[in-house]
Length: 309
Image 1 (cartoon, rainbow, N blue to C red):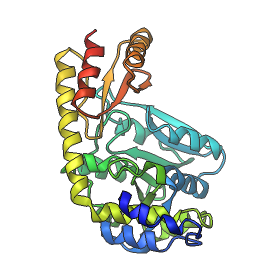
Image 2: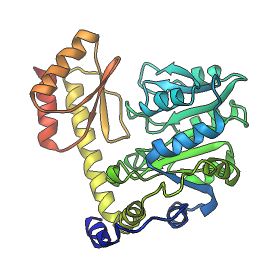
Image 3: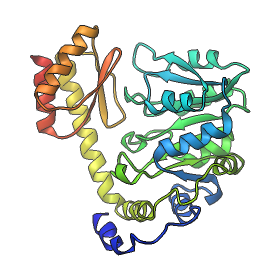
Image 4: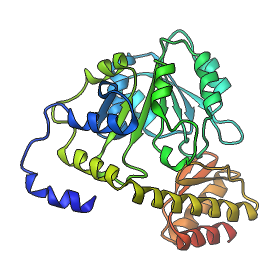
């Protein structure tokens, strides 16, 4: 991927496509859908903003879990939507029954994550089908799959059958996590062609930079390397989770590139934060727990030592 970007550096003075055409076709061919079903943007947040602009008017409700990806409450606030935040279940999963009950006549969008950020929990196909059978078909349901590559063997890997069976589903994916292109901001949505056309009404000219397309194609061409990296991270994730559980910590099973460790109270969280800062380890603290991105064995040893102290 680095070689592909370096080779294209001499074209940095040229504009990208006015509206993206090649990148949606590239993604569509890879994931097995029609190119008119693919909407691209500057990361998942860019695509999400277009979706909110199209479907949510001021005062209208967006149902989501809490905690979740920070971008959801922030962007919903930017379009002046009403954030309906449903607490997670005790096991760290999204409480789908409570989320269904939160959907009312003013709800314009529902956001699900699988694997979930920050806990790493996942939704099965049966759970997704159950949920969608209880949400009005005119309410778009986001299925954020930013971490899907780390859910090896998961039931929601194939996008085409999901959006074919459920036309109100919008699947979000990114090249920022497993593919490692966070700086290039490459995100996309897969949906019905009708929904995609509505999302693309908000596409800004020259929004997708030319290096995003080059990076995405290079990643697809080196997918075998990606899978080796994913396998290594998943193995280290499971190893770290087992070690933390042996310390008596509450660590839900994760299907992302992170582990989530529940803590007792705010004092507990502050002590942990100071310990991680002392060791130079960056973590993300949430009410009720801490998300730790998985790295290598040396980092895992440091993390375990902080919790054991």
